[in-house]
Length: 160
Image (tube, rainbow, N blue to C red; front, side, top):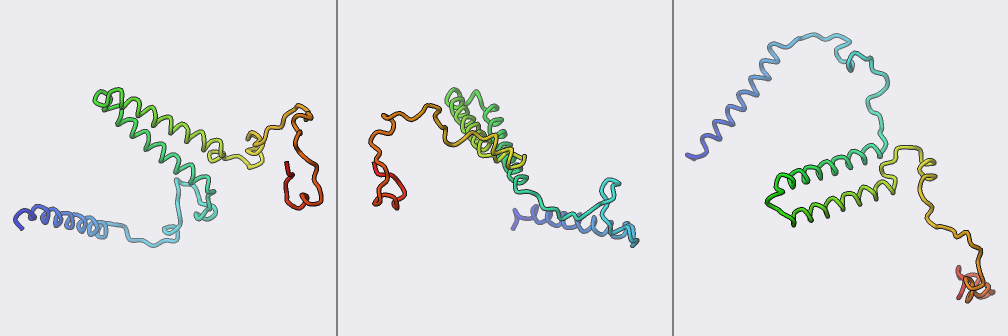
């Protein structure tokens, strides 16, 4: 009990300060109820519509990506402070770390997670999944394939 008294005094002082601030704001605060008191006010601009707007999930995705990549910047800053102590091993490790970050960013970019445009524009800008050859099919390319017969038509693929 002898070592806890500073903590108890500190806790009591915190309670006194909080109670004093709330009490002073109640005693010194304005007391008026007008119609305009309860209306929202934002920088002198009259509000229009509801404050309960729905945001696209893309907004939250970009926010999460920002937080993730911002935290990575903190790790890189900590590495730069300890550069002399970690030496070449730490340098190689941070290069791998940054390579993983860049690969993640490229992946998110290619998947369209950072696109805010309409879906039609995004689809046109993505590379095709299958690249068709401009060369005509040669007999050597189709060698070994048999035409579909009555037995193989219902199976869904040609039998080689």
